[in-house]
Length: 150
Image 1 (spheres, helix red, strand yellow):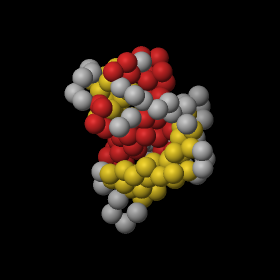
Image 2 (image 1 turned 90 degrees about the vertical axis):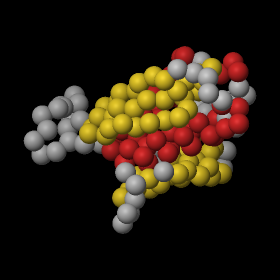
Image 3 (image 1 turned 60 degrees about the vertical axis):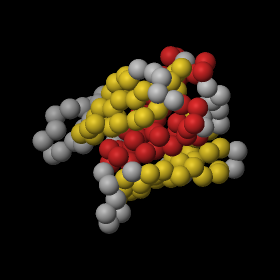
Image 4 (image 1 turned 90 degrees about the horizontal axis):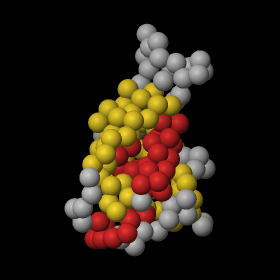
């Protein structure tokens, strides 16, 4: 699992890879944290918290997961770091879960550690965008590219 921060006009992008969908989502989330703050400032402070997200498709799941992390940062005053995506459940033909009757539901279970913003110099990431978002399977890995509005 790895990520790279990429310059993007007035925004910032994260390109990430992983050997599974879960590790790729976690790599993008770790890229989001790195875009927010220098890793040396993070330290070991902060409690782990759980994140659960549902969405109508794989790309929406990634978007909603990252959006939830930004929301939690804004509401709780903590920068989510050390991301772990424990499970991504994708619908199958026998899935009966529905999201507003629009289709089968994708589900994500994850956790992160919340570092108090008061103790670090964090750049504000305003939002995740669908602009140029990519999430695709390669021969051996998954690749993601996500642009964040700063």
